[in-house]
Amino acid sequence: MKGKILDFNQESRSGVISGDDGNRYNFDMEQWKGSVLPKVGNKVDFAAKGENAEAIYIETLVAGGASKKIAAALFAFFLGAFGAHKFYLGYTKQGVIMLLVFLFGFILLGIPSAIIGIIAFVEFILYLVKSDEEFEQTYVIGKKPWF
Image (cartoon, rainbow, N blue to C red; front, side, top):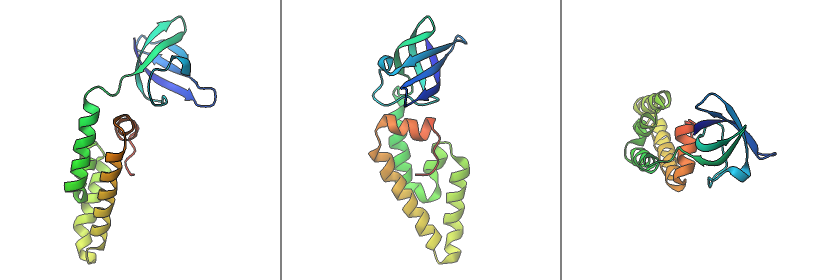
């Protein structure tokens, strides 16, 4: 069955999944089959057994996670000062901010433009050092727009 994690408590290492059938299922870490901790919003595939979920697998990383990471990193490296990687990841507001600061930065002797370029380069490095799962969780599912 497919579903989405509604709640996860790290202290008790348990949580709740909302199944696509409209029911809620409890789970604990013994049933989690992923390599990273579950997070609220993760899409999962699981087996329902009464009110509990068993054999829970994260569903977010199919084949597109790695390619989205590499493409975003390349955009950040080559066109990052223009905010291209932000637009690619769906962060339109942040992309517009980067683009405008870069373009209008030349009025102020290019200092804001250089800062935007440095920010884009830092994001390029961050994108590359994160695993595919971390990238997917942080920037695609978690929608973290900066660093």
